[in-house]
Length: 187
Image 1 (cartoon, rainbow, N blue to C red):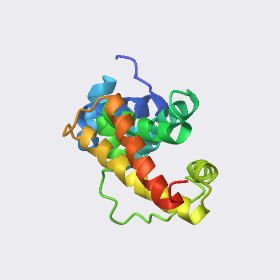
Image 2: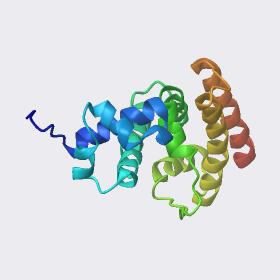
Image 3: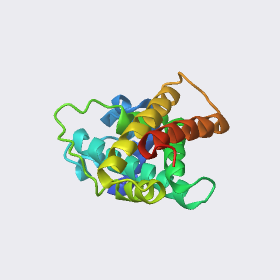
């Protein structure tokens, strides 16, 4: 009798993340995950109740990877921190198309999404400090610029665009400067 193949939850989540990278979340099936692991589906269901639980863990893992893009972008010093967050968001969309779609382009029907200013607090602080505007204004500023950044990222993730980073950087600067003028009157 061949030895039983044992996997940890982390190994299964890593394999599930890889399947999702290749085939999107719709490709994350028990059969596809088992093939990625080189085993049967039995070890998966020994550690997870169902594929929905695996998918939830993939979202958590994809978000952790996304957060590492943002953190690295904001600390490496290539761009000012606020701009770096937008560049990192777009870079994530370019390099991790399926994970970007999973996090930012999935159907959110039924999810309760509340405005959580604490989650974007670092961005708001940068905007308030650099522009001298109120928190409420900074929140709207960030939302308006994020809509622009998200549009670029979505077009890149869906292969509609393939802009180079210099063009993206210039486009973000133009959008930022336009909003800055609107909120500060050109100060």
